[in-house]
Image 1 (cartoon, rainbow, N blue to C red):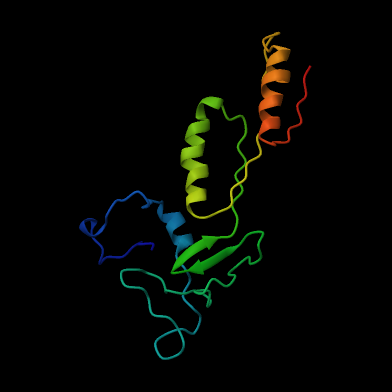
Image 2: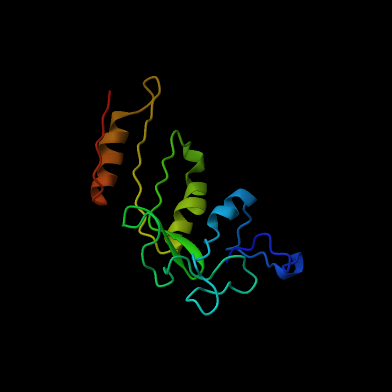
Length: 157
């Protein structure tokens, strides 16, 4: 549920919980479903949800039918008055290893908690002036990946 510009909601009405998000007004405006054209009581339209500013359904997609953009490759579905995404791709570059746990906790795990099938592609570039022992790669890294059936293209030099 998105509450935006609703004068009937006060700070006391809001509960800050782990799944609550505070977003900028410009983004909130884009996330609120558009009212159905020709809608209204008695004409097949949908009444606004209590406390909300938009309709419960936009474009008849309450049941999970494809919304704008449709298809499995992307797009938006309106479900339960919320905009739901079919696909998210996040491309991060030059991510220091020190941030990997944070990325897991703050990016990967929330997507998995939503029920999404999450897969990652990892490119590791390690370099140093004769800093990497060949045995570390051959006996340690390659063997570990092999035991987990993880395919990897390892280039050395």
